[in-house]
Image (cartoon, rainbow, N blue to C red; front, side, top):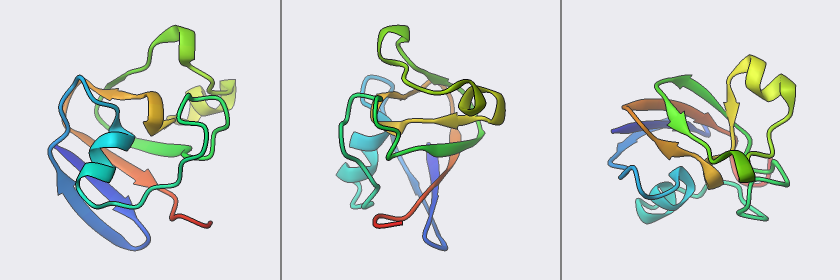
Length: 92
């Protein structure tokens, strides 16, 4: 289960481990920001409040500060446990 906080709302969705968080959010009608969909641009930059994700090293475009402060790119992050994430609204 993934609890998504976005634009003052909170919604819990089911997200399979083999699907990126971005795709799971979109499949559940959540409009999340995205551009490159490859982890490079950082537009979908979201805070991982709790839980664990898998990010393949070859596509992990996060900056060191993102790693220190718990930010992920949902376009290339895959859930390993139940999660809570804070996602910026589209058009931020």
